[in-house]
Length: 279
Image (tube, rainbow, N blue to C red; front, side):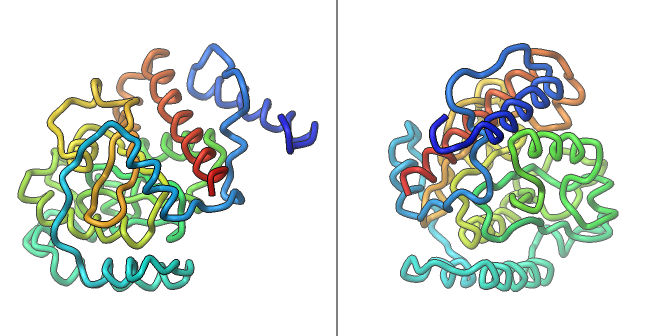
């Protein structure tokens, strides 16, 4: 491994061993470890993400409407500072809570769950909707599925503070049911603006509903997972890796599903590393 010393190599090897025990993987990846990609790596510029997305074999329709906040974030492709992005996200959160047609008519949730993490994150995780624990705390992915997601993020060499986590819906559906089409239509424009502000280099779509919404498809997650797609939000296309929801992983905690999900996360790490190198 060029560019890293023996101590770093040992640390990476230990990380791989820990990951193998965590996810039930009974093999060690060959070649350079994608776990060498960390938050300290250079953040890829927008042009790099555009070139990567253009190479993906996925033709997505382009969104037409753009929010005022997202337009400001994308103006002249000028890079925004972390603080500027944080302020824009705060403004978007306030606008969402005041106007979202899904959330303002709902009576079954106690609070909205907008999202959290690094506003300048290179990696974004998107699920379908908050659950009971998330509704109680106002934070995404904090229940058992959230704990599993934390383990996966750690295995990738990150922590929650270095990525951004959000959902398609910002409030809990009744009995944690799957979001309805009209609910997705009401909340998804706010997610689109979140993505436009953060400008991640890659998105991990957690589960079928989130993957279908981001990729505009009806294909099931078992067929979608592991294959790169593109989220076309009307500005810069973002590569999307569909994978299992952590809750599904807990319900189907087999060696096969754990290996499949870890394979998906390795592909994400490799793409982030390639983007950082290209920039």
